[in-house]
Image (cartoon, rainbow, N blue to C red; front, top):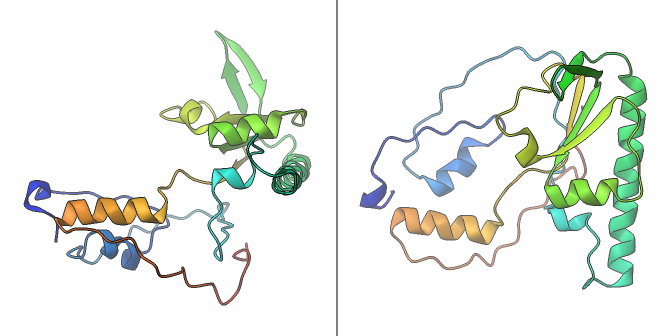
Amino acid sequence: NFHSTYQVPKLVLDATMSPDINRHYAPQTPEPLTLAVETPNVFIRQILDRAVPNSSYVPTDNASVRTNDTRRRGLERIRLFIELRARQFYGRGLPVKVGNDDMVDIDVLVTGPKRFVEALLDGWAPPQRVELAHYNEIAGSNRWAGVALMICVGRLQLPVTDAEEIAGVMQGTRHRHSTARWRRSPCPGRIPS
């Protein structure tokens, strides 16, 4: 149960979170109200068998040469994926307003954490009609409503230990960091699209 300080109405909106996971943060959560919305052109490809933090792709000064080489190869795979999808969706986007009244055709929007977007652009020019923006650039904006494809790399999410600590505070309990390892998916890799 939430600590008495947090006994206020709460609204949780999440397109992909499992109710079972949410109950770890809020055990008294009732059965969710499910809204069915048709999204015939939307699919989610998600890596299930491991956490993939921003640092998995961003080379740093304090990492080993081997680690940074792995990160650069990951960036290159993502660049190739973007280039492939840009060819597939070429000409499908609607004009997007830039500046005062200028319009430009954008087919694909790629979003991610700021450091990731900066690393992706380092030494690489995205294909025509592809735009990259970090999360803070897109927050609250409807500018890219006409893109044909949005590629979202990663999401802003707390590390597990931080989330457990916050849940402990909200429930008014002393928190001990979990020593359990995350259960590996029986089908490692990506969810089929």
